[in-house]
Amino acid sequence: MLDAPGARSPDREHLHEDDAVTIFAPLAFRALDVKNRIFRSNLSGMFDDYNGHGGNARINWERKFAAGGCGAIISSYTPVSVRGRILTRYAMIDDDDKIPFWRRVGETAHDHDCRFLMQLSHSGRQQDLGGVENLYKKGLSSTDNKDYFHGLLAQAMTRPEIAEVVEQFAQGARRAREAGLDGVELHGANGYLITQFLSSGINDRSDEYGGDWQARSRFVLEIIRAIRREVGPDFHLQMKVNAVDHNDWLYPWQKKGNTLDESVKICRLLLDDGKGVDAIHVSSGSTFPHPRNPPGDLPMRELVRWYDGMLSQGVRARFNYSIFSNPLGAILFRRYWLWRRGKIIEGINADYARAVTEAVRAVDPSVKVLVTGGWQHADAIAGAIRSGACDGVSIGRPLIANPDLPKILAQGNGPAPGKECTYCNKCLINDLENPLGCYELSRYDGNTFDEKYDAMIAEVMSVFEPPTFT
Image 1 (cartoon, rainbow, N blue to C red):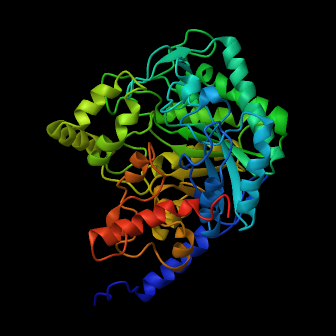
Image 2 (image 1 turned 120 degrees about the vertical axis):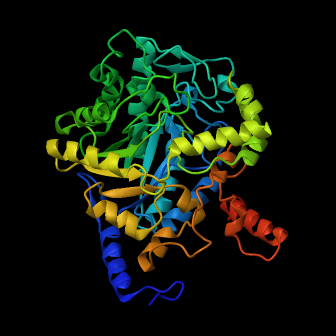
Image 3 (image 1 turned 45 degrees about the vertical axis):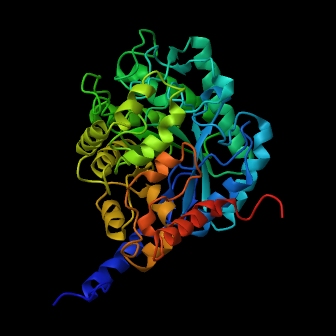
């Protein structure tokens, strides 16, 4: 006999109890304890002041996920310098005057027994909206070649520039520790500066920072050692990395980039004989966005409406816009994008994470592995953990859709029908010009379009409540 809609059989009830035990078991790193296995992935809207000082909306934003039950929050991309901004109006960590704000953010998370990790980042050439300070500057990179997607211009860094950026990362980590945060993550995935050095598909240097996988790892290894010099061995440090670059997935004439075998070797190197990273955070895709990151749909109507801000940024953006705005071009590009993504969304990187886990555990059993990739169901998350693929998962879009997702998973397998994240990626596209939030109208209650739309806007704008001044 089939169960009634929404009901669970006794076997399913028992299975969920096992899933919940797995997901909500504490996770102990070398220098950090987290209450459960759910990490909010690195995401945030343009909520802050243009000059990189933090805003009240960001505190409200992070409070949502801490109160919702996440074990830890990984901050949005936090630039270590204005030259490394990815988007404007993102709080930075480029100066000691930023420490008090980040202390307040950390305290907000700690009020809910949630850990807070700062993701130290540098855009390199992948600078979507770098602001007026970077208007006439090319992005610092491992190469002089422009970004292949938007056509963002680049210049290969000199040795003095490399040394300067290494120190900027180290000082960012020091400031994070002085702010009372629980650790830092290096963004070494998805096309940003560290990826630009690590990837064989991007790095074309002929000096000691280019060549084989060990030479391409020199830059990030110098960063890790500089961070340890500043914060010591007892401050949590993890690294987000592409398990596979898939650098040629959009344009087959591009180089393939790092294979899984190369990435596994790089991850082992980053352990640095027990003095390096405490955890690896697995992703894939050598640019952002990429068919595999974030895996989901490509909403062409929203893309045409909000991509125009990129027209002044990259030399390929106008060509892209002409494709997106052409009815036939949009259909073909979206179909190609979805074909390259593949059928799997939830758990898309699980097999990659398993290979990384096996490799790093053989060297240092204390190192933990996190994996991102559309997670929102208890059986999928618990299954990945129990299988040995990972120790925990990081979640982005499904938490935007349901900030209390951990509480939902404690009670059942996932969000109610109609309330799940649809992986439409409208949140991603809207973030170029609008407050970050869930823009999938079908998820909101209401009998008419206007009622649903009003409910959606109320939820999106809730990040500004309470306001800065009352």
